[in-house]
Image (cartoon, rainbow, N blue to C red; front, side):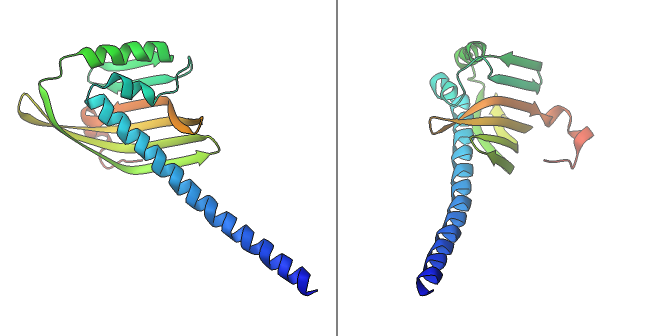
Length: 171
């Protein structure tokens, strides 16, 4: 009887430690995802083509969507996304300086090797020396491949043009 109680007790300890480990694992995965997305923005602003492309899933189903001052842009497939970022990395951005990026209101939902992420982003910078801001809604669908989180779908909506219509709304 004592052995049975001891075995049940040990099994309960393993179960409890397993539950807390899973919670810790989820928090570690969320931190890893945030790190990838912070890096993505940093690499983009540095016009680091290799760095930007490294965080994307490199297949024909990868999607890039944006709505902003240049209208709506939809690019499907890593090959075409590469062309887009290559052109961007070769553009003259010398008028833009002093970037400060703030990401807030993170929502990260992980299910297995997939994650749905959405957050708000504010970017402060100078254009030709004049202070400017953008406010965007950011959505990412991510997949963990070979131990690394990769972006499968990026959606960027520049809210700066719509703020009066959506004042007070947030994810």
